[in-house]
Length: 111
Image (cartoon, rainbow, N blue to C red; front, side, top):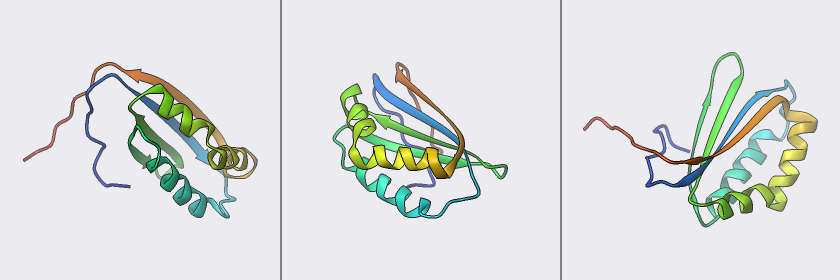
């Protein structure tokens, strides 16, 4: 994705915050992650995604969606469901998912 944060959008919209700690076993993860990014970009209503990871291993992905229907389409996509299962079996030591409706949003960018 980008090295800049996703821009602020006119609310309301939805956000999915996925926080993870990965296992040592990451075989297949980079390819699957790239495929998931391809899939989510094609979902109508997908607005963008931010990623961050600290040196200790905590990773956070934040995905933005225009409406609940587009978020549901992503959540229930067949390939995404398979990747979720593989993540639980192999790639993640732990994770947390938070989903919310954004009611206020603004951004700043130095000119």
